[in-house]
Length: 56
Image (cartoon, rainbow, N blue to C red; front, side):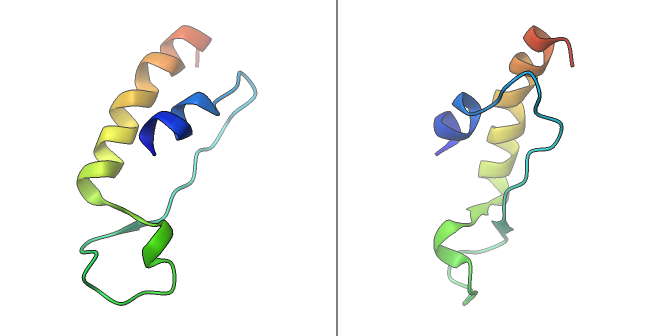
């Protein structure tokens, strides 16, 4: 999922939004499409080099 989000970034991207959940065992309407906190961290770390390359 992180790779798919990263690959969708474009030079015109200003904001990247993603639902996150503290624990997948919690019941939530977006539970199936949410990422956990550690995955959000991984997403941010994966996006930083893309931002640098695009000059953001």
